Image (cartoon, rainbow, N blue to C red; front, side):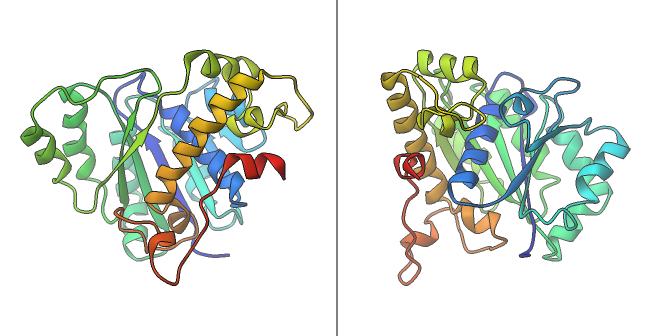
Length: 270
């Protein structure tokens, strides 16, 4: 198996859509036939677990035995990607723990690939999180995610302030998650279905469903836009243990490394 990848999704503020981003990543890996396992740190009843019960375990990331359950099994699990949905307020403490147990050093030594998806809120306090988070990143790939799923208005401060924070981390990459029509989001949540299944008119177990044609269309269009962002920053390179992506172009944009953009319609039809 290639070098395993660990992806942390989190923020120190709640209500910014961390689990929504985790769900899109799991769908994206599924669409590209990349096996993944997930850990939901919303103890005792996690949201991510509801949508991906077969892939997800609920853990208390502050509890040492649960930390062992995640990080002692990264290589032995025989799964390329380990995704961890971090509960609100625990991103910095989790990164601190990873530093203390030597995980950050292992990533520096190229024993694994480490990426952090920092889901930003709309206030300046959210940018203040960046400085604290940066202290623990090491050589991790760092993605600052603006999630518009709830019609959030971002960065109501001057561009100089914005640039100061974003340039504080070498190689930091910004990702935008567009808004999904509210009724479509509600129906996906009501169905407890992955976005990919809903767009394909399938129940979570894969059986045929009878979801709205209109709402499925909105979800499919939205998910294609999300996938395009993941393609742009080379998420598959990270998932497959590579370091090729710079955040400016994906590997499909490099001559001799063409890779077709994943489309939900194609996956749904397969």
